Length: 357
Image 1 (spheres, rainbow, N blue to C red):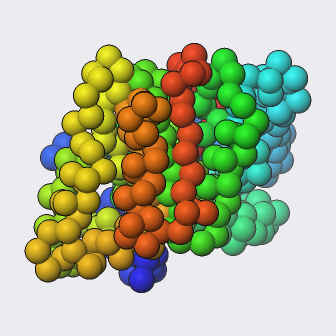
Image 2 (image 1 turned 30 degrees about the vertical axis):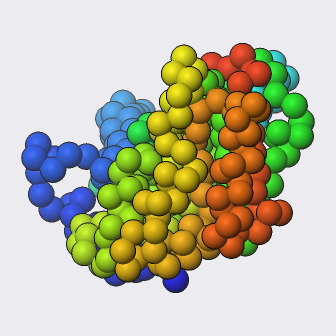
């Protein structure tokens, strides 16, 4: 059974974020999201309060509080519309993407931010000079923001558990050229609704295979699929684990994940020799009494394999695929992408994808 985050898990994480000191425990993505929304609330609250102090010299207190809240709300609405529609309508910006951003997801994030801006403005308006209009509007916003708050907090949990080495979305991955069939292959892996799909990413050093693997897994995490990012060496140790529940502070281990990213299997050019061969990898899979469990999990999990160069003379791709078909993976579920021929350098897209907000 693949792990999903439950309401109990959310409450436990919320308690951890609200109680304790960051100086000794570090900052989580969920804590950062809470702090960010408080910042949005404050950016609505503080300007409204200042505006009220100015406007009350010319209007009644009730009018001044409403006008200030309205002005601040309109300002942030205009700012966010420009911030969102600018890159969306720019043909130059769109042409820089190999994979288009998830505009619907970004639009939802923009709307969420606006709700917090407006809530701060309305709260300041009520505290400065109470009006029924502001109270009703604030209550409506409070109800409307419940689902976005739940969705984004849950999403941040799905993003922080895998321990990705960096935050990177698929639209941020860039290359000078990549065939349409390879783009379709990545999309096929992303949109696959079955378990047991395997994607091999071959390429030399700095070909972008790690960033592409993280980007693909990140998109799936945002879709609320449980993921684990690990290196091959770390996974070797995990093969020996008998009890998945032994890690008390981890929501799921690699055996309960829907997506598994295995990085650093082989470094690739300029290192020609394969540090890990398919035969060697399988020998670690088949360890003691856990061999059937390990084989079953690999067969039933969507896996991204980050390897070195695909040496045709040594038939590396074929050997890795043969290893998986040998443990029962269907050949139709084996996908391979070679980045060796692409001049690729991952860069940050012009548009702020707002995932880190």
